[in-house]
Length: 218
Length: 180
Image (cartoon, rainbow over all chains, first blue to last red; front, side, top):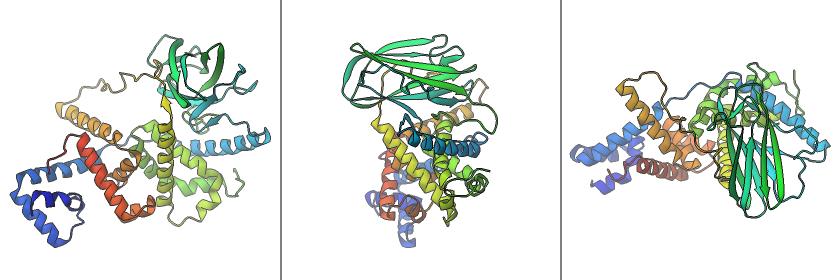
């Protein structure tokens, strides 16, 4: 057996899926080819290293949080249905549709969507801006309340910057650390005399069985 | 005790899924590489299944079935995420302190082991979601190709090719290509 043929059986040999006669032939080649033998050792070590990668323990009450989330989703679905299908958020994302003239809050007079966050830890809040067209020179700003910190900018309550939105979904990830009671994160987007606001209530998770899920929107 | 529209109680649901949660979380962590993301993924799956308690009662092999649902959700989330264009912004800039080692003093061996693990985790991040899933389930969690064929709903031949490509990609990322 030559190196090229041996290479063809590389994975099957590693996974012990070769017929005995073929396995024997590969063994014979490995015994006389240092390069292939070294590659096999590296493959085996890689497999071992993958299996040894540690998994940190999960937080307590994962199942209870999921059940709470499932029950809330059901209630929200029923409420949305009753309210004529007013949908705001999907999964872990808080979404806003741009290109509308209105400056009203996303939910009109309703409370802003709520995200449960673990106190004292940096966690991303994901905001999705749906844009119908490319928009250059958009001014984005994010403002956090007392007791909430933007992870990379301790002490700064407000950030402003220019960005370009592409058609479709644009993700803004804001890493926050909630240190106190939480509060409302205000995102603002301005372009050509129009603006759109998106408020998200950051709620510290309570260390009890009824606490809300990480990063989930209400 | 909460009753869903489909019937069944919250306690029934908990009793059914609880024995599988550790394994689900473990696979979710291997898929995502971050504890928070893994918990979100498991929570999302369970929350979706919660109103479908009666359907769960009819599933023969709940463990592999839940793994399949988790895999689908993982792929779905990644595809949705891939459609999102990440806005360049200073608020979302990577935190340079994220990968700093803890303050505890480490031995040289521990430092090298941590660097190797970190390198391997970064290499896994370089795989596409399907490749990562097959490496996780086959190479890390010990599923056979036949079992994976059921879980991932793909022919064994397809999975074997996928595994081959995933390993080749991993070796390439780790700089091991061309040694055999």
